[in-house]
Image 1 (cartoon, rainbow, N blue to C red):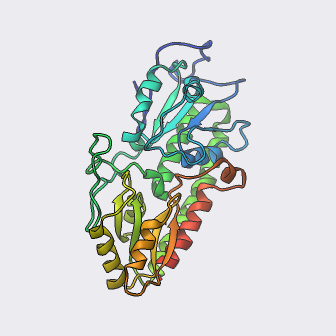
Image 2: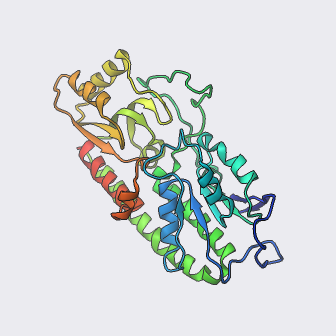
Image 3: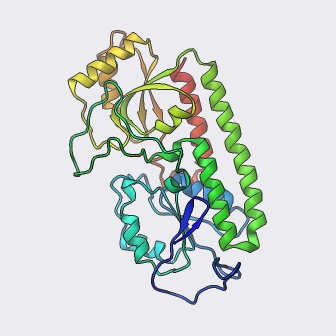
Length: 325
């Protein structure tokens, strides 16, 4: 296994096609004269790659389409084929990606570069913890998610910057002819990420409140940490629960009243039933129900209409502004 910075280049068994010419002492691959095949499991990574690869004549492929939940995703035969001969494969790397190890072990391209987001972010990873009032998850799959690392690393813009830098390194390694383009694209995209990060930080600094309340799963650990926000929520981010207990509803409704919060938050794809029940059990019964987008329900139609990582995070900034006012 070859280590490059904080991500791994995995040497895989079996060769589907003639290996590309080597560079740099024979360790790096080259795609000169060939189409570059790049695959990302989730939408945020796909969008980062699309920005980094702009102008190269190549576009990435998104594996988990139309709002497929990564926590329950199982690749199809077509997914495995798509991955098998990829030059670059980006995945999250948490508990939900346990299927990746077997898929990579059976991949055909021995020179594939695999980038594990959580490996890149080693040192910045946060644990998924139960906060006051949060409902503990019943055992659905025999796995204990509590105390493990939170997988929703893409919801930190600062994390996005680090992963994009690692992806640029990977792209430059396997496609040296376009290295200057990738580096230029990284500089421009990083500037956009930094500007939005600053905008969100300013929005939160100007807000009169510093606490959010989620009537839903809570996948925003990294976002809350970046901006030093407090929160209460019904369930952890990886929870499979769909019904909240009386104690959970009562606690969250009480916090809504105690802190005079103007809104209860849900995540994308939610039916908002728990949030409505919390509002109905509060004294004022007037809190708005807002959606903070975790990018786990992005559809092909959304992508075709121009939805991007930056546009979703800007929408989240506006939601935060309303929820904290």
